[in-house]
Length: 233
Image (cartoon, rainbow, N blue to C red):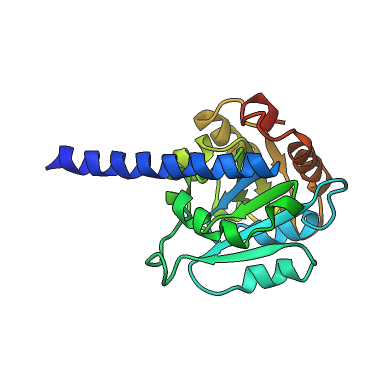
């Protein structure tokens, strides 16, 4: 019985990867680079996007906003006059706690890909499932808020291993917390040696220029170059 369950999971992931490759082909044809933006709920993904989505020179950014229900985050980003498409996992997909390749594919007709250089897919807030499902992205960014504690990379290692960049957010709160950002960074490196990290604050703007530069380089890489060294900028 255990082996049967494993086989079902493997088949589901294989099917997802096939659809992700189809998504990737469509993104390449449109000349769009894609970032899968992941974190736990409340880590600050949307607030960080508000700083850069409409103000990254030379890069036309659009957002595919994933949530179980509602459009509050999409409404915030749409107020910046950038292309935003809402993708809810409930009820069409049973209220899933992540986006998968098929969900993203269902939203492609609503995305103005020809008008974009960079598409940011803001995944559903979750520290487990989003890391398991590729969606056709070039790179993944993980946001870890210091309010979550130092141990999250050790407790949820796949999420941190699956990304090309870790943003450590809410560093403006460090004086008020018994948390060491150095220990958090060490734990990130323990599970994913060499992954770049950036300390940022969506509240004060600290570190935002560095992250904006990362996105600008990502959006400037010619489509079809792949998600290897070019994505790890």
